Length: 123
Image 1 (cartoon, helix red, strand yellow):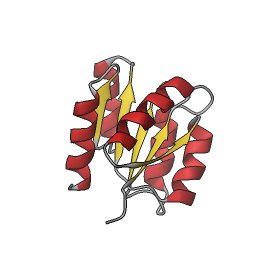
Image 2 (image 1 turned 30 degrees about the horizontal axis):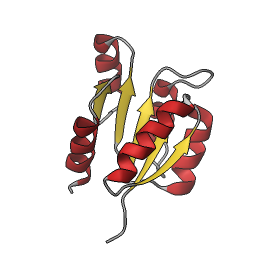
Image 3 (image 1 turned 135 degrees about the vertical axis):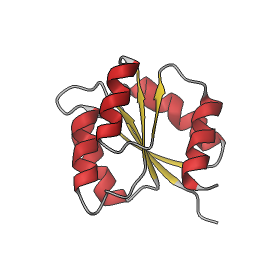
Image 4 (image 1 turned 30 degrees about the vertical axis):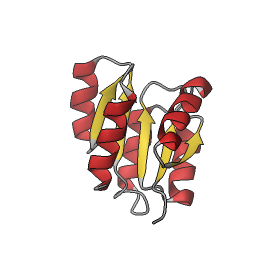
């Protein structure tokens, strides 16, 4: 069986490295984009099975990324999990507006993240 491919869109390299380590340890393939612009391009080119998306990023924030992904026929069906340190109520409302599949508040337990990814991917 092929490994499920997860795209991590995050502007903090340390957070990317930690997330990569957590997900690769349980068998996922991880690709990363350091920022929103790169994330949009990689999502279209790589066609990941799921996207982990940070909200608070410079230039192109996670809301803009999500809007772009959901409006693009090539990427609109890719599930999105938002991971953020932003205020929960604000994220919850905006996440629903953009058809986000799930969101987690940073810091989060890696076991919760992995369980949610498996649930969304049907593993």
